[in-house]
Length: 130
View 1: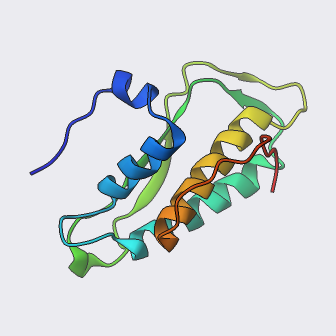
View 2 (view 1 turned 120 degrees about the vertical axis):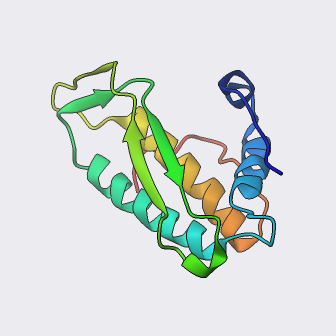
């Protein structure tokens, strides 16, 4: 069995519901695929490192595609993160894209908590870099 959720439902998720949803996504029916989660987290950290210095483009309403092979025998092979939806990308006038960084940081925090079996606690103020 699998679940289908349309993008409108996804847009209404709270941060805690997002963690539950991602936990469901990374559970292949036999358990949480923590090795895949760790690989996805590494890829997102590398993307964050890039965006901490990238000042040419501003990404508005772009998306991240997270994929993995549900077959546990594959380990973390076949898992990847891809940036998609560049229709509203524009020059950024030599500034770091702080909104994109904030989104990456939030996603990294949620995925890290999920991988560690902890409940995500949203920061009281938005983080920018790091």
